[in-house]
Amino acid sequence: DQGKAVLFYQTAMDTVYLNELGIEPLQPELERINQIASLGDLKKYLTESAPLQNRYFFSFGVTPDLNNSNYNAAFMGSGNLGLPERDYYVEEDEHTLYIQDEYKKHIARMLGFLGIEEAEAKAKAEAIFELEKQMAEQQLTKEERRNPIILNNPKSVAEISEMMPAIDWKNHFKEIGAEKADTVIVADLNYLK
Image (cartoon, rainbow, N blue to C red; front, side, top):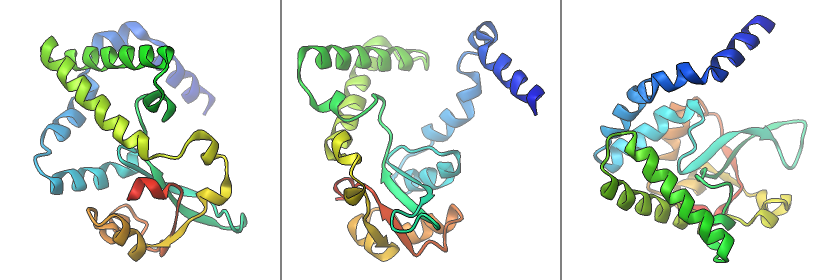
């Protein structure tokens, strides 16, 4: 096991090799994403990629139950953002605006690696940022996330389905192997509205 850990570390640190690979290791995933042409395709992709811990629009996992730490509970919250947390999207001070601008440049640079022309990459970067900003605005603040009472919202699958009907939650949980989860702790109710 120690040898595996050393090999993993050496592989991850071999930047010359990784630079030679470029985006090649990502190609299968990028092709799957490019095939998304409808809301149904997106739902299917989100379900199929859930075991990889892809948290694009929402997160789901298992954690100690907030009401009884002797048990584990299904836990659901908001999705991941490109910037560390919501304040980077909603604050408008000079330093935060600078970070936002640099982040948009970073997104455009990453899109350039996919062969997208500079002008189009900048426009797409702006759209990506705006989508993330809309998501961030619905998330709890970092102060609110520290309050376990605010995070503790046990909901049935039926209640989650009513709150966010765009996804067939019963099927989603079944497909990811969580069909026995009859109650899910929803950490961020604002996000599901």
